[in-house]
Length: 359
Image (cartoon, rainbow, N blue to C red; front, side, top):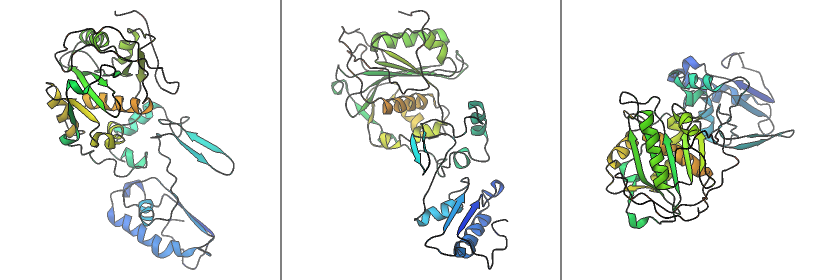
């Protein structure tokens, strides 16, 4: 029986409503309001005993004012949200079982592959965040302002601050393709300082050479490489050291979702840039126009770093070594005494690949 079928004169102890709105009506405001009004006037009054009875609504989210949104706004309902891709780790308990979902885990790994997920993301209708992530409102722009990004000077940076490299590789090398990005983040207590950045439409050889320059000059505790495009090839040519881990990272959510979970961090002024870095205006312009700007490679490297550091907040100091010396031409001088970091057992997907040594 449809939601608007004949219910007059009928009562129930349990009422289960399954998908009260069709996907084709997700933007039909009149139909959405018609369903909500019918529920209020006809359905919720049909419980034989409102104190003991229950109403269960099982549905994808299709709009902010669909039936689930309508009842959640009034409060008093238990909300069980099961997105296709788990945005965070969570444990669900019932009388019989305990079920744990890890962050990034698919709801139906037996039925969906990563290729299937990417195909669903690319579809304009229905909206991926609404229908599959159960996340109304996530299609809105993140609304980051330039005043959210702070500045720092070299006097603010301790020589003992650990360094993390975040690398976003281009799909292909060369001036006609997208940008590759290498970011060096210092992590003093309570702040994230982007001390240096390189961004070019470079050949793979130029890109690899720049990564090597950052590794030599910055002596990072961790090197994060997106496991797409030229990333795996780059990782296979860098040998992991006992005091430097290499982490391959596969993005599992769309770009807007990745930055949205860090909005509080960004808006709180924790991220700071060198005051006179020549790349600072471009970085801020890309961040404040995201996702509507021409490029998003710097934002990808930023969110990759923020995701990883949120899971690995404590970096153990590396043994001291003489400074490499010299200036990078991009920001803070090259050469910092860094710290050792242990590879987290829970970091997945990721890994260390080694073939030949670059230095």
